[in-house]
Length: 267
Image 1: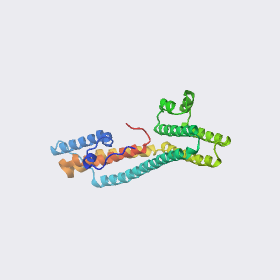
Image 2 (image 1 turned 90 degrees about the vertical axis):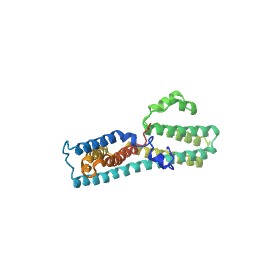
Image 3 (image 1 turned 120 degrees about the horizontal axis):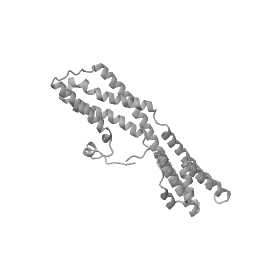
Image 4 (image 1 turned 30 degrees about the vertical axis):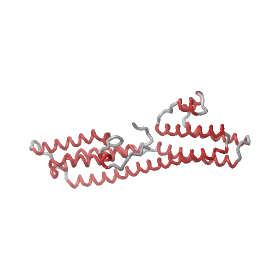
């Protein structure tokens, strides 16, 4: 997670990189341009622009605000749960590092490398990207054939957990570890599996597409008819006020879409 400095008010006010403004700027510029054209045409009386009834526009805005709030809350809940799951993954990896001191150096190193492989594979699975093979070849007990099998496996992280479990079972049967040590390490492996299941559930069940499209269209329609409703009351201030309101609605729409797919890698 990228943590930015929020102590400087001016940096927050004029921030560009990492904000939602670059994404909504084209649509926002178009809305402001429409507002300026409406004001210009109305000022010179070149055309009589019909005013949108205030009551209808108000009802539209209230309903849209409520629905947008519901969507943002749902997307934020997904992001918050994913944040907690990834934090639990880090915690369990650290528990394994501490509890594995009872193993031999070779067994402990192999186990830790397997956990690292699992974390990398889970990350790439959630981001829908392909793992970099050289990382595993340099830092883990893998050869080219094993790596190819991982890439071809439908659920590579689960396959790694199975291998870890098999190694622990073999060590228990060979008398290399006690049943207490086996139970302790197995609990961590089970928890890693639960974490993966939670992450897969979030990644595999996005918000309904039709619901997102409906709100997306409603937001854009609202912003595009906004100048026609406010021009009579605001006059030359219409482009500025419309731009601020449109930035809020377009930004919330784009932000909910972004945090709704927070697993995906972004540039």
